[in-house]
Amino acid sequence: MLRYGEEIGMGENLRLKERDAIRTPMQWTNGRNGGFSTSERLVRPAIDKGPYGFDAVNVEEQLRRPGSLLRWMIELIRIRKECPAIGAGEWRILPTRSRHVLAVLYTRRDSAVLCLHNFDETPREVKLDLKMPSGGERLRSLFGNGESHGSAGRHRLRLEPLGYDWYRVG
Image (cartoon, rainbow, N blue to C red; front, side, top):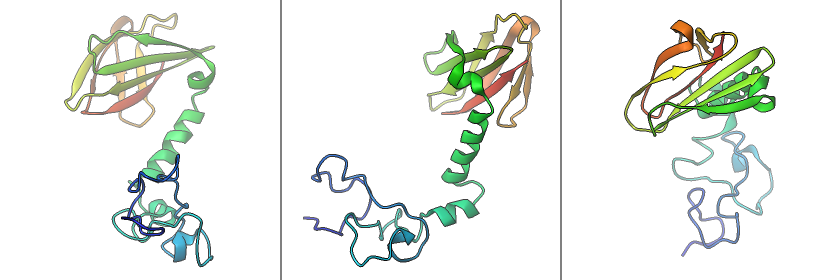
């Protein structure tokens, strides 16, 4: 039986009420209590053991590593903010002929963003027809993965297993 302060990782004591099983202090550094507090005892203890302990996972460490989850999320938020069509525009789901790939086209005024997501563990290729007033002949990856030039807005795009790409249209 786990006692207070003995949880090794998030979600390990599911007998805790409501969301307490997953609520742990933010791990800012590898210092005491993950840099969250200098208090002797926290209401919910910091994770101090195992692969998710504050020695291994903390904001300070994640910011130092270019490929970390935190750095990826910061970049994703930056790209999302550069694309107001995603939050304020109109959207439509495009047919992909694959139940594993979701294609959503967001449009706002003169800008458009295409978001593709492969939910399969194998690579997928899709053919899309971007019937747009501007034609949609050119797609530029927002993640720096290249471009696609399609004739009359028709594109053939490949997605890695569980992969995604977002494109600026035009």
